[in-house]
Length: 247
Image (cartoon, rainbow, N blue to C red; front, side):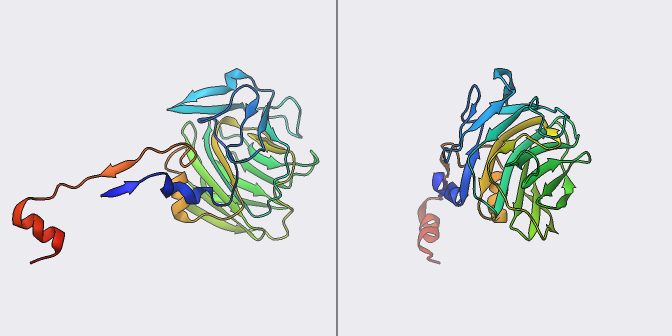
């Protein structure tokens, strides 16, 4: 018998600093942190931005292209200092267009971001930590895709849909996730599209863990149903040989 239950996903909680999953929880102007107390506040967003998506929900961002942290842009703001310099960022993204838009940013003084993740016009991802690096693989539009980015202070690695893209050197970087952390937005404006199942880790993840995160939105955060596989054994002497190893 093969069994997979909630214990199979326990390692996905190791090093998990925060988790935001509209598919599971949230309403009004609050996006709950499912593992801690750093709840997000929706700004310039309303009930219509909680949208049905598949078997769950997602947050919709309108793609405001006004740069410079304009207060009219919609975003989710997290004010608690994460205190994380080694960053593993996981999210599900459904982009409507491939304009240069922000997925997230740590922006403590509203002027110089410490960490920023941007979706570029060609669909690639860009991480800024004092200097920029980019993924070689790209996202497409109008479908859900999983992204994982790991930045350890020396290099940034990119994964899309559980597949490794590339690692880029990023020396001389700035500090990582601090206060005024934004989701769905950064200096370049709001993402035009949808976000779900956003997680922040203080460690790198194995490829197997990344593939697991890329298999389903909300995996390991909600109660997983048990999956059992039963095998039909033959009867008689043949059954006895299988069970005992007898010739």
